[in-house]
Length: 159
Image (cartoon, rainbow, N blue to C red):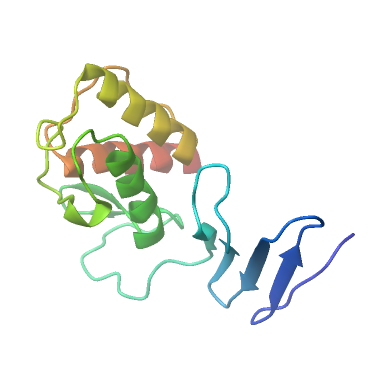
């Protein structure tokens, strides 16, 4: 079965013998998939989002060639949708009660309570989430440093 959505349209998919529904929204700038019941990873709400163009406010950005990253003086940074995925990876593996909202650019792996195994788990999660390769066992001095590494790998993957 093939269903085509035009921008602004929404599709609700119900699975037979299931109480859950998936809502697919095709907006002007993005496609999102929302689940009203937990998926296999326990997520509800927006479980997938693909943004088609960069955010409107690109002040301070010097290089914009990708939907996922841009460069600023001092390094590369991720756009908000991918930054949220990045922070979710970090908070998912923190042994302390850390939320994505509490992680700042200057936060270190020590602040997050990571041991060497946690760092490896984060690196593997980031590689899987962003389909990139990062150096093994490379502790980061700050979250911003790790974000720069991820965004730089995305840059190289875009070429």
